[in-house]
Image (cartoon, rainbow, N blue to C red; front, side, top):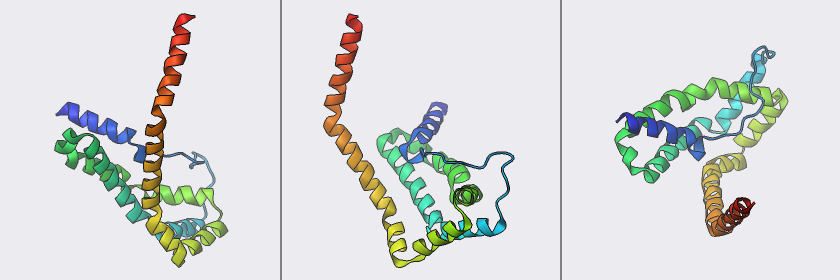
Length: 164
C-alpha cells in the first residue's frame, strides 16, 4: 500500500496537466501589490471562471491517471484528498490573485476582466479546456505518428557514438 501511495504521488507530480511554466512570481521583499490591483486580479479570475476550471482540471488529472494506471483506483480517495488540500481553488486562490496582480497592471487586469466577462470571453472560457485537451491529443497523435523517426535518429546517434 505504501508503494501505491508513493507511486500515486509521483504520478500526480509528473502528470502533464500538473506541470506549468512559471512566471515572475512574488519574491521575498517584493513591493506589496495595492489592494485595488489585487481586487482587479480577483475579479478577473472570477470572470475567467477559475474555480470551475481548477476543479475540472483536477478531476481530469485524476481520471487520466486512473485510466493510465488502473491499479491506482485503490488510492483514488487519497489522491483526490491530497489534490483538494493543496491544489484546489481554495488552496491556490490567494497565490493566483498575487500572481496575476504582479504580472498585469490594474488597468490591464480591468481590460482582461472586461473581455472575459463579455459573451465571447465567456464562450472562450467555456471552450478553453476542450481546446486544450484537443490540442494535447493532437500533439500526442503527431508524436506517435513520427515516433519511429525519432527512434531511428536516436539509434543512429547511439550507433555512431559506440563506434567512436
